Amino acid sequence: MTTPDTPQPDAPFMRVIKTYVLRAGRMGPGQTRAFDQFGPQFLVPYQPERLDATATFGRAAPLILEIGFGMGDATAKIAQTRPDDNFLCCEVHAPGVGALLKRCGEEGIGNIRIVQHDAIEVMDHMLGDNSLDGVHIFFPDPWHKSRHHKRRLIQSPFVNRLAHHIKPGGYLHLATDWQPYAEQMLHVVSAEPLLKNTATDASGFAPKPSYRPLTKFENRGLKLGHGVWDLVFTKV
Image (spheres, one colour):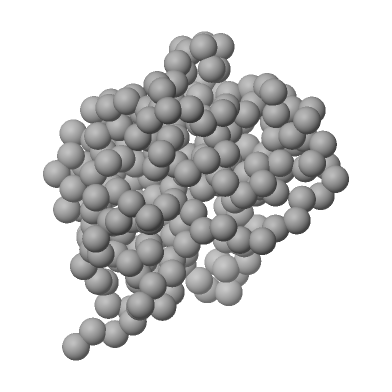
């Protein structure tokens, strides 16, 4: 017998499934100004052709794709912690894009570029196979109700897609604060033959890498006794 928390087999990964869900959000005046002031420097327009990462960032460096950065606080901190890496960040929600643009401009974070578009189409059309040194997906929508599990992003076809874009030796880092989704993620990613789990713990989950900062939401949850699960896999 299954329960709402029982890991479910993958649903068909239909093309209509996207890496985001549009939600209402109002931009503040600072976020609005950031589009005009900093957009030309940090925004990369979506285009159905391969991205020249060296030209886009003005240097050759390891390329990390982040899918869904929310308001961009963790993204900004990671980029500042890892100045030798380039971060290509996909987010569709304008308030979050505006917030990260503002931080990049005001704090001089030069190793971030933002594509305000669905990450699946960005991968399919702008990124080639073996083009990424890493992928970050932190706290994707868990779609708590069992009838909505088919909308979860981490499904086998999507993970296989990611794996083909990651270079051998590159990594996939996932994090979630919803245990049933963590267990499904572990099941799905462990089944991908191109990826190998780096975890040494019997649970299959990895310690939080030092570069991933604790968000305010995460700190609040930990104080209430809620868990957070990290998965780090490398491409073989």
